[in-house]
Image (cartoon, rainbow over all chains, first blue to last red; front, side, top):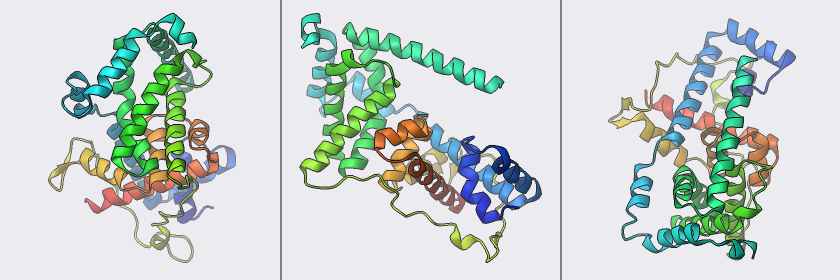
Length: 94
Length: 209
């Protein structure tokens, strides 16, 4: 039987689907019997989802910076746009 | 099994969409570049800044990486995903910059984030049982701010290596092996750092209740 400390150490493996066989069975058994660990794994799943959502948020500043480059990086953005738009086949081989 | 099939379907769809973007970039499409830029630039800035150590140098490194992406798009063979390829270019640029400055780059486990050791008794049992959290959404207001803002702040406060692993694995959805390859470290180390990053974020969120 795993201890609560061992369950916590393996919790990311469970969330990422990296446990299998005996390891997975021992985790499930412990989580079935232990309310604290079950709550902990739920908390870690929520934490992971919030971190993922945070990365998926559209970055409004980035969007507006691209549509209207403003004073900060007009040279960079126009240079990149020019590069993206003006590449010719003979240059691409170089 | 159904989940696995859906995952494979999603991956195939993503590969098709990437192949289309690559074709458009090679043809010089401004729209394709804009789409790619919007998708990755913020993440690239975070990663570059994490490696080179300052925002200004991180911006310069990201700009250099974009130029390299455009210059080398014909060499992209599609063996790895486009995001993987872009982040390899970015981290190589960032490494070169740090080495030019005479510093060392390492993404090995930095040994921080053991935070929960004190939560257990001598037999490995909880001293105080964790409580059930109510549903937390990014838009929920906690302590006067959106939960998403608290999470973003906590991610920024992570040690750089943990932050990069979290961004690549959780936010960009790259595999442990891709993340390990990009950061030139082991998959085991990626797993350890991701776990520590999650524990640190969880502790931060717990303090908000």
